[in-house]
Image 1: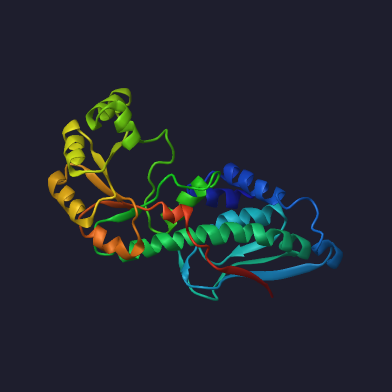
Image 2: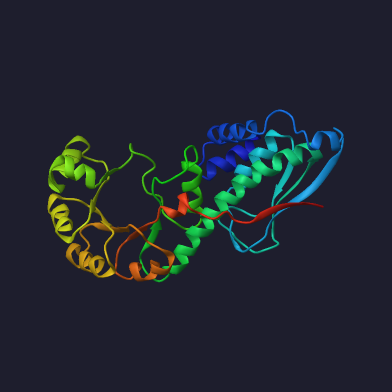
Length: 285
């Protein structure tokens, strides 16, 4: 990987070695021989092409796709940066190189670009829907195995906020923890005693649990499957003493109604586990 591309990835908050490992794994899935392209194109044949958006949205994954091109010896020129709004027909990356290599790179690059851009576009739609409120959309751990870092990166590029990366960097006390511990207070105190400086969030199903979590000292409360009326009441009860995050069954058409209750975040697992791919294609020029 060139120092320039490595620097671009690092500046984006991505580990170049981890991205390269992921790309190599993806390329390996295609096997060693392209039985379609090799009989048709000679080793010396060359091609140029443009990866272009086929709809309006937000792009993410451009430097990741560029790792694919570098590994396969395809020259590339990014035309946009991650996080930019793009329109149908807009060129995202231009490429040139051996025809066989360009075609081998095509699908892996598109798989990454379309998936990550789909997540970024979804995050931007939620962000736009809540414009003018203080609420922000936040992701979850509902990610595809091996792709969590890139998926959360795409959420961020779309204007969303990342929640914890894993089980190690923040605590989320959920219903099963509470049931096993015996109460909200007991669960919270156990985690806080073990990790005094760690961010701890408590999931609450009822307003009574919200009051208990607050009394225990929780600075972050997840409002699980509450109505907008219940959320607004939770906001009133908490009165700024803890951050509040709405969760459970949230849909884009409800986003603004939930946001105006005064919560700080909307947790949306669908950003990563159900994002529709963004339509991008490669056309030879």
